[in-house]
View (cartoon, rainbow, N blue to C red):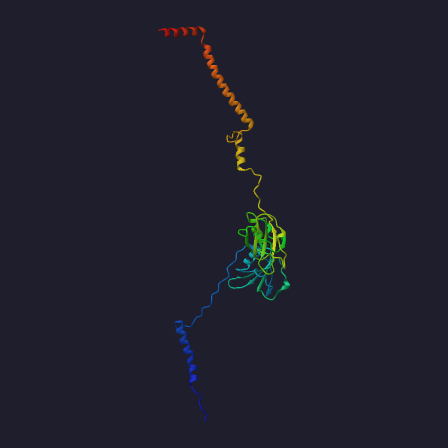
Length: 320
């Protein structure tokens, strides 16, 4: 005897579309056909830059830069500007990140040339650009000392002491040797500088600390023997600021010269003092002589007959 299959599975399948439609209407709040909202993504903002760079190649991968040289970038042009502001930078790689905003990562390789053999071709995840050219050749040293763009180390040493004042005001963070020399040139007083890189391989192109020595010369005897790679790079100031001339006349000397011989506060010379004393003595003698002359003239003005008459008058007055 054959048993008929149960009818409830068939009934459930028949009612399923109606149940789903009812649930959809309740969820959307209407009886019409459901509509789907697509996700909105921002459009990349247009970049504005005074720099241009030629696209050399597109790659899937390339050797990663050393620590401290990969920086976040808002776009390709921002990457070009970063390369231009951090010499020596002969090429730059932009690693695409967010396709909707155009942002990504900027890889720079200071002092290196692009090695096509070190890359993996086949896609455009990495965009390799030649050295950027910016309007007016704008660099961190434009209008100042161009020699700081690619400084040449005077010595590569270890263990050199800090400036005498103990780095209170003569030490600063620096993005590299070039940045260190720019700070030295702009300082009020900087004879030479020592750049201390903060990375494993110790090249002078990466961030570190800049020690600026306000006076004196580099003394090699103060350096210690390196146990490995050099840890400090010494640079002389290529564009020292002019110093005030020590031969300039002082304020006191200028006042004295401008007053000339009419300056009453200047003590008299010995010869002048002697002349003044002689003049004073002669004046006193002249005045005394004048008094004597007056007395003499008074006596001389009285005649002998007048004297006799005066004497007789006195005698007559006594007798009365």
